[in-house]
Image 1 (cartoon, rainbow, N blue to C red):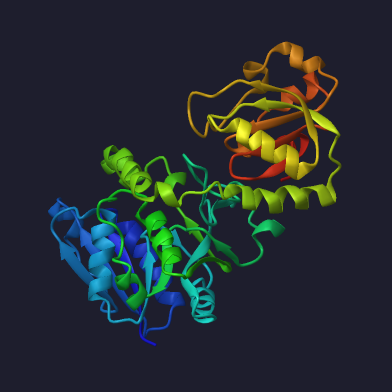
Image 2 (cartoon, one colour; image 1 turned 45 degrees about the vertical axis):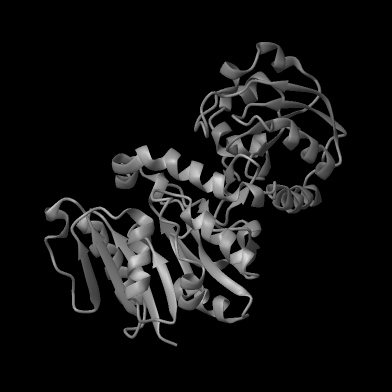
Length: 371
């Protein structure tokens, strides 16, 4: 089957050339590679690419959805793979995706397992939902953890790498151009499922994704004003399809956790998240862990995904003397990593942490960097 890769490019020529050099070394020469260059600044497009690459130049900013739709339209492949210019692959990530796509006609889209370049932990491995948020199962988990060692069907996935059959992509209308900044890949996943097909994560397709891990992300600095518009459009279009399916992933992780760790009969549930849905999480955690809560205490965060929560700043000092174990609920479990002093203030050996993405670990292991 003819195959094509479509890569949108806006700026940062050096990064583009580096990414293409990795692809050139790893992928067979008969795979078509199309770069859709689009920018309002002529200098961003004032260069040529080696002969292997087809360079489409559009002298205005198309934004993501229009750029990839143009590339797919121009592609000759029966299989098309969307690939961002900030994807760095140091092994063959392409062949495992193709094998999974072709393994069953019910497979509609396949994405890679993506690592954070700053810490070698998972940054993207499928997308799940509550009624109000897009969630990232496995975010922050070590790349070699057994939870991410197998292929998984997921509700939707990211298009930073996404492989589909071209006829399916086009029959579904491509990426929704009313979501120019983000969420068009989430929307595509719902369209795949509505067509009776499946979205999959390929565990053996491993890449690094610069994306949101970089403080100098060009997309964020140039077009973040479109973020809210894209999110509103996604939720308006797909709200009737949204189910709190993160519960399904928690059913796996929390029950798997119980196999290797003791679970106490009851905990103090302490909400340190930015989620208004923390009580929904509390109910599910209680049921899936087979435990109880003495009480629910809430100290809501005013920012989403806070990176560093200092427990002795967030909680009353009286919590040091609670004799019962605490279960902390946070946006991201790694936000509690830098709490060495709390381990001296309080006996934490029975304390647990559950985050919004369905991860669960002992607090002591998080602080020690063991998970």
